[in-house]
Structure formats: C-alpha cells, structure tokens
Length: 453
Image 1 (cartoon, rainbow, N blue to C red):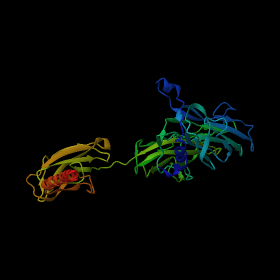
Image 2: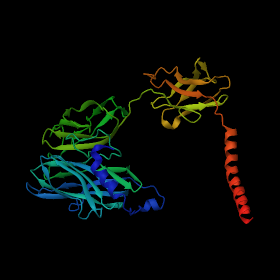
Image 3: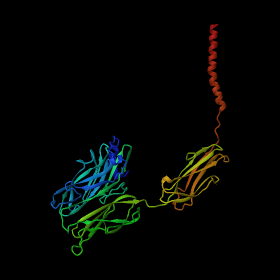
Image 4: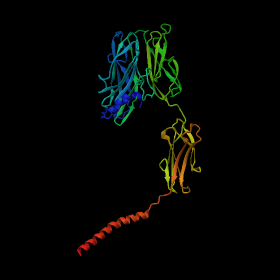
C-alpha cells in the first residue's frame, strides 16, 4: 500500500466493514454503456466555469463548486485544484454542505499557495453515483488580473513516486470505491473540466493559453522524453497592433521538484506509473498565467528475463522413494521480462550426471505470468542403488538471462530400503490379547463349579 494513501485507505477499510448501501447508475441497470465521469469547475452564481466580473476588486470573495457528473458508484475522492496566488487566495472550503456525500469525512487537506489538495471519504461505507457537488471553494481576491482554475489530471492509479512540486499529494483527480470484500481501491474512468477567473476585461487583457505535448508518446522509465509547449500562445496577441507572446514556461512533472523552464524540455521519469504533468505559462504584456494538466503514463523499461519458477519431484520440492519407484518431474518456466524469449531446457540427475529425456529444444515463451510453460519428465529408478541423488534443471542458450541466478535449479531425491513390517509379532500379540480374556472366562467357570460341589 502506498504510504501517502494511508489515511484515506484506513478510513475506507474501517467503514467497509459496515453494510454498503449501493445506488446503481441507471445506465448500468439498463446495460447501456456508462459515459466517463466528469469532475468540473463551476459557479452557480455565474452559471459558468469561467468567472468574469470587474466588480470583484481586492478583498471581494467568490465561490466555485467542484462538481461530479455521470459518476458510477464511489465512496471517496481525491483531487487538487491549481490557481495563481498572485490574484486570488483560498479563503475557505466546504465538503459537507449540500454535497454528494451524506456523511463526508476529510482524510487529508493541504492548502499551499497555488494549490488546494483534498481527500474525502464517505463515512458509513455508503456508495453514491450520478451527479452532484464534491466540495465548494471560496476565494478572496488579491488584485486585478486573471487566474486559471485547473483541476489535476484524472489519474486512475497514481505512481508510487507521484507528488506535486510542493511535495504534497494528492496531485491527481480520481474517484475510489471500496467494498466489504476488498480494501484495494477500484478506479473509475474520469475526465476533468477547468475554469478561469478574471476581474479585468479588454482586448489587451486576455490571459495566455497553455498547450503542450510530448514525444515519444509511449514512455518507459529512464527514457528521455521531450515536452513541447511551443503551441502555447497569448490570446490577445495582435501582430503590428499589440504584439505579445509567452514569456515564461514552468514544468511540474508530478514526481517532486519544480523549476524546469523553456518551451522545449527533456525529462526522464525514474519510475513507472501514472503522473500528472502541469504546465504553467505567463505572457509578456500582463504577466497573466494559464495552466494545463495532463495524465502521462510511464511503463516499465523493457528488459529480458526468463526463470525456472519451480521444480516438483512427485509433487514436492524433494522426494523419498523406494527402489524401483518412478520419479515424476514437473518444471514451470516463467518470463517476467517484456520480450518473447527462446531457450533450451535440460533435466539431468546424478551422480553420475545423466540427461533425463526428452530434451526440450527451441522453446519460446511470451512475457507475463499467464504465459508460463510446464514441462514433464519421468525417471525410472529400478537401476539406481540406495542413496541421495540430485536433479538439475537448466535453462541454456538464453543469452539475455544475466546474471544466470535462475538458470539452474537443483533438487534432491533419496532412495531408501523399504520398511519391513513385523507381521508375525503383531499376529502373535493379537493372539495373546485374545487368549488372555478367554483364559479368564474359563478360570471363572471352574471356580464356580468347585463352589457348587
């Protein structure tokens, strides 16, 4: 279990022992495909996710809702909301008034300048679905300008090393459901919709637009990837009239640390998993910012591997046989790597060393535990004397299995003298046990006869 999830998961584990009340989405009941859940920024007062109001001067406040729509069953959520602290500051937040959870419980909360991070579980293990409000955030206005209101990217299963530039989590958006039979979260398909705040208007007062992509699109741990934000632009750029451009770029790759700058930036992720990549751009005429958050998946770096997973001798790691018994050998081979591998397999015994037919040559195995290969061999022992013998199972001609720690697996079997069961003493003992009570009965009859006489 990931350490940073301990609080939330402990709550889920505690509440999952209580009866779960499930409300199924209607589309699920009808067997129709369920659209992705959408977590979005919205203002009930303004009826939109983009708040533009010139009357909101310094000291004024406004409230936004973080809503959920089309949600399947869930009983916890984690999210982060990013903003520009130059122009607005979080004044308060509320996850219990008029929200979708009847009994919400805060698992974690962090309000660092520029980001509010929240994890909430529904106490009582009640799962909900459909649409509603997750929580409300009230902002205080610091000055005149513009600020993005950007949700962390929807991440189904955050990487072990995933965290924000400030070192805090969650750095993602996701819904979680825990049941009485499972303490591991089951992720749901989620998308996000962002918002914006402005208290200035005019043709030269538009904020920039952050856009980026990366290459290659499929990334492995340790592989260098180039992030490209050259498509970002300033919305009020008018060549010859009001030329403007993106002045600064700031990258947060979602694994801690910040300060990466430039429209093109190379980066290599150390570990596999899912990350939130956040780009912040600022224009050169107003200094206003925009942010873009995207999910990036890093796969395990490709590698070669093959191993002997197990060797069974008559169903056990070791075997004890009587003379002339047959030894049945079962070998399981696995490929924990990422490539299709080829190999030869030999099974031998000794001393002296002799091969046990058949040889398994030109074998191939696909990667993954579900593609294991099982090999069977038998060894008659009628010509072997009493004693202990060694069975060696070896993978050969597999150059990528380095170091070859799993190339040879050794097992032992022993042939012993059969046990001599003492049948005669046993039979004699049984006869004695029967004779004793019979003698007692005869003796009693004689004594009675003598008394009568």
